[in-house]
Image (tube, rainbow, N blue to C red; front, side, top):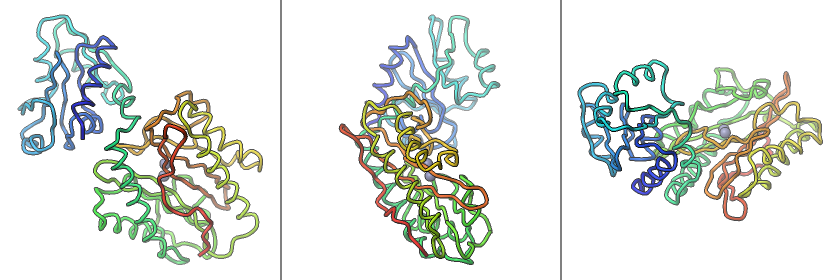
Length: 357
Ligand code: ZN
Ligand code: ZN
């Protein structure tokens, strides 16, 4: 990973925002900027240098992982040690307001002299993380392939009478066997009427004799998340159910077709939603069309109504419309795509034809 260029780019952001320093503590941001994967770490940007603080439990891990920063092992709270660097000059130090508790923010003020001002910031590192570099894209492609392979391994376990949790267990075992770091979120397996729950985590309920089964799952691979959803049907599909499925698939394809640099996230959402409106199913589409994915499972941009963020090449997003009809069932189809110079490329290599089991 080219941590140095990421740090240099962030240093430029600090200069543009007239910040003399910055404290990073959010784990995904630490991993992104310096490679550290442990907990209790703090990366300080100050006076053109980078210092990484952690405690004695992580001495070896920090030495192995941390790139392009001096490592300081501390006995006390990391912030206290970091604050000692600021000295007597007037300075403005940024911190991650979205990841700082009210308690910590109150403590921070006590740690510094009057001339040091803490500046709450939001999304500065995330903004940089939205566009993935070449190495991140390689890892994400591998994560998506692994996520697809383990889904396909679990697919034969989907049949009437099998518990949702067993399907999830087979999928998760396959992920571990493939060498995944873990799952990128709690696996969703929602069968029959439960498929109408957009976030129906796998329960102990058995798959009924007929109905949709929504499987939404992802692996974490070298820190990066995959995310995919497929909906299959157990037993014969009714004409109405097929119509719902075809509508969701058409909406998903329309969403993908709308993805290109310069388009707003809201326009992509609108493209998918519009297809469902034509068949009067849009009122059952109760969430946004997708989200960014990377070191975290939900990252910006959010592809929701009126979202003004413009897509750029290198962003990795999901396209995942769904309809959820209370008492009957639900369908969601989700792929990961990367925004390219001219449009996008679908990463998820799994068929979207309706599978009847
Ligand atoms: Zn998902
Ligand atoms: Zn998703």
